[in-house]
Length: 77
Image (cartoon, rainbow, N blue to C red; front, side, top):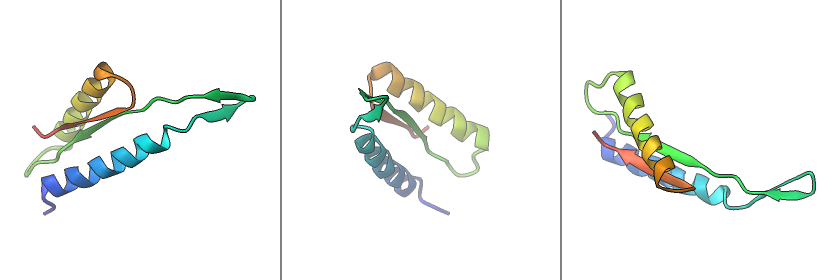
């Protein structure tokens, strides 16, 4: 079984890379367009049901969206 803390650390690293990629605006119709990104990470615990993990990730996503722009949040429980 994968250690949830290792998986969360990996997801955090990927999230930071994704947020960095979104810092560069896109050129659309000769205009610069900034994009925003919010990410939610939900840890999978032993014997978890998929809907519990999705609920954690959704909760983390809601926190990220409520706290600002271009953020990720983690829900461990």
